[in-house]
View 1 (cartoon, rainbow, N blue to C red):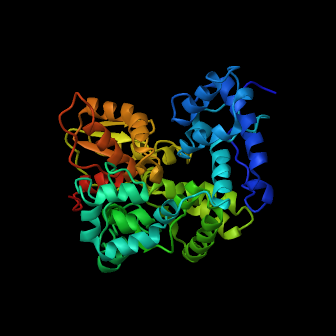
View 2: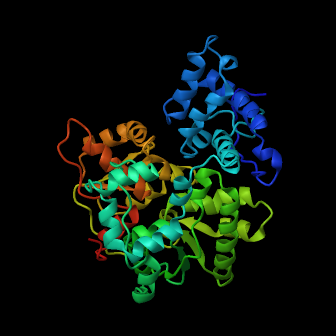
View 3: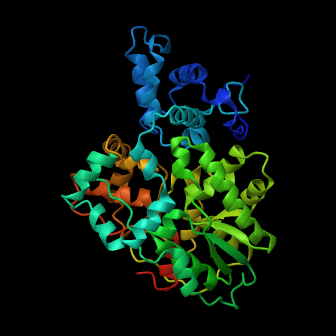
Length: 448
C-alpha cells in the first residue's frame, strides 16, 4: 500500500437499492472508519465546516480520539457538508483506487439518504427542493413572488424564516413570467453561416435554474453559439435532481435521470451535442447519474455526450476557432470557479473561455464560495456559508474589477452578499454574471 494514491480518482456506483445502504448502524461504523482516517490526516481542514467540526469532536473528547465520540454526534459533520466534492477531487490522498477507499461526500450522502428514509427530513425542507413545481408557480405570480422573497421585505422574510427555515438575509433567486423554454420558442437566433464552427448542432439542457430563475444565461449562451455557427434547440424535460440529491432522495434523482436521458437521447440520435448551462447539472449528467443508474445505457450515453457550456465554447475555439467580433471588457473580470465545475475534472474551462476575449484581464479564484446550493440559504447554515465564503469575498473586493462572475449563479450572488458585509469596502458590484453572459457582452449581443 502506498501513502496516498497516485492514480486518478475512481468512484464506485451507489448501491442505493440495497437495504444495507440505509442501515444506520453500518453507516455509523463506516463513518467511524473514515473519520478516523480524516482525523489523522487533516488535509481538508480549510475546505468547509464539516472538517473543523469533525476535528473538534475528536480533539474535545476525553481521549482526543474518535473512540470517545458518540456516533450520534456525527450528524453535526453531515449537516455541514455541501456535497461540493472538492475533498474527493482535489485534496484527499485516500480516494479509490487507494486501499482506504475513502469517499467522504458519498458517505455524507448515504447518511442523508438513511435519514430521509427514516422520515427525519422536515416537510418544509422536502418542499423547497421541488424546483420544477416551485418554478412554475413562481413564474405565474413572478412580481408577487419576487416581492415576497426580497431580503428587504420585513413582512414576508421573517415569516419565511419561521415557517420554512430560510434565513431572512439570504438572497433568493428571482422568478420570471416567461421561462427560458418559452423565450426560446419566441426568439430563435440567426445562425452565422460564415463561422468556422458552422454545422455543429447542440441541445441546451435548460436546467431548472436557467429555465425559471435566470433565462438570460440561456439567451446569452444561445446567442454566442449562434454567432459561432451552432444550431441550437432548447429542451427541458425535468430538473437534474441535484436538490433531491442533496437530501439523499436517490429514487427521485433516478426517476428524473430516466426521464431526461430518454428525451435527450432522441436528440443525440439526430447528431446533437448536449450542453448543460449550470455546472451542478453538468456534474449530475456526466458523473452522478451513471453512479446511481450504472446499468442504464441511456444514462451512460448521455453522460458521454454532455458538455458544460464553457467547456463547449472552448472546444469550438480549439477545434475550429471562434467567430471574430469580440471587444474587450474594460476593467477586467474576477472569475470564481464553481466547485461543481472543478469536480467535473475538465480543467478551468470558464477561465479558458474568458481568456479568449481581447486583452483579457481575468483574476481567477479557486475556492468554495460557501453557498452550497439550497444548503446555504437555511437559517442554521447562512452565517456559516458567509464565513466559509469570506476569503472569496475578500479576494474579490481586493481585485476591484467591475465584473464579478461565477459559473454558479447562486455562488456569484453569495459572493456579493459576502462583499457587502466586509468592513473595509463601501460597496459591492450591482450585479454578478455568468461567464457566458460576459462572452455575449463582448460580442455585443444585447446582454445588459
